Image (tube, rainbow, N blue to C red; front, top):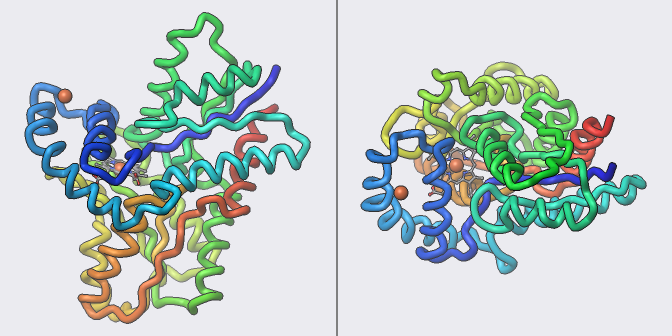
Length: 322
Ligand SMILES: C=CC1=C(C)c2cc3[nH]c(cc4nc(cc5[nH]c(cc1n2)c(C)c5CCC(=O)O)C(CCC(=O)O)=C4C)c(C)c3C=C
Ligand SMILES: [Fe+2]
Ligand SMILES: [Fe+2]
């Protein structure tokens, strides 16, 4: 049997324009795993207000973080794919690596076609979401299942459910914090900010919030931090219902008043830098913290294609070879 790896991430617009953002948001926000509101209620709001008004606004935000080679999420994802492929080759393991996005291009269908063309008949699916959520991981599974419906011969496959407490992941995060401290000195606190989800999803059984808290505890323990030296918050709220709390933006505005003037921020739920880290955390939230009396703010980049992150991917994938 020949095994291949299918790396999956969320996806991103093809250009920082209102049109491309609208196409991306429309696909993303039509996914029932992401927004579970009945379509009769959701579609009028989505088509009448959210897509027309949010798309130009968000396009301007994408313009502020866009790289010459493209959207950071896409550029980093391609680098991850290449680095993992090379690392596997260097270890003498013949395993093609494809990249598929849940929304937009390259699609999961194109990634599966590339693996099939390489003669793969066994697939390790690695959704690059360390913490399981219905809104991300389950949606990857849905896309895979939809693809497999068209196959007469479904390949053997393994689905990596989550890796929120995996040793190499925790070590890679801790290593990136230490590198930050070595370069810029240590802040008064390490804030671990995770993408949020609606609180209702957690009440209905989504383990995401619990897994985020566990990741934070393990990183703090690995770094030898005391309880008052780190905090977990949730960012990127969308819509009106309550999301997981405490909210990152409220915390930013409050910390300087509590005597925390120098802050280090890491976003462990993001395996690649993207709009939500480079703009929301590194720009918007920095401005909130400084306006409230903060003195130093350091955003610690996502693990991206750092060698420790690629080693972690190797560990996760090779574990599935037995
Ligand atoms: C509508 C509800 C949303 C849920 C639930 C949600 C969960 C969720 N998302 C990520 C990772 C990413 N989200 C990104 C962008 C983004 N997310 C939402 C909404 C929800 N996300 C929107 C509407 C957007 C687009 C930007 C905007 O309009 O504000 C991204 C960045 C993509 C990029 O192109 O850079 C990532 C990555 C996780 C991990 C998660 C739940 C655990
Ligand atoms: Fe619709
Ligand atoms: Fe999101």
